[in-house]
Image (cartoon, rainbow, N blue to C red; front, side, top):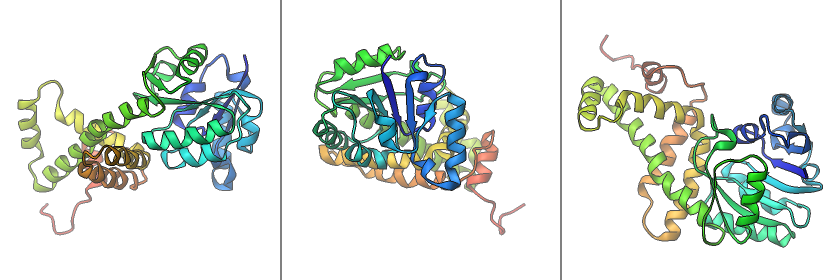
Length: 289
């Protein structure tokens, strides 16, 4: 097994590495180790995954045959532009960014002599981990898919097309997925403030019986409180995608603000819809008892 690099070691990195046969050959770098305030926690993440942590990206990239780029959306291009991977390395860009961002990253990686693969992660990494569905595209997609399968990923599909084809599917799908989360928050917060939450939920349940809207609202608010900041960054890339297509992005722009506002609360999502509503919609002093 060749050396594997992981640049960025958050939720996805830990999920991909957990229990993997290639962990003894992996080296990880996360910029949180640069900050004394977050260094110990990140080093604990490395230890929990039994991954060797490094102090620089260059050290994590040294001698690699495959690299997972798993940073935040706003750092994806900068990471590719500053990377110096070994010649021939497969750069598996798993970040949720616009096709144009992926193409710019590909130019930087290919200029360094490595092979760029556009990877779209199409579902939450937990609990699936290496079973999460992945789509890959670009001139090295077949090699990238073969490497991912070799590393234990069980659900890899190759998308015909250039770099950006896989991420276009991910970005455009996010218009609906993240947009519905933001719409549900706007709806249930207004219903709660107006004192008609139960009636609104009953009305929605009557027209959409596949799942209780109370359950939907609870789940969506949980996702936004937990991942709102990261999802807002991803939705900025969605806007870039839609603007490049010329199809309009007004709802996606609104989703950015709603996701960012929920994520900025900075608290762990409490259990249950009532608790989440209380956290997001503080009771006004002039409200009736």
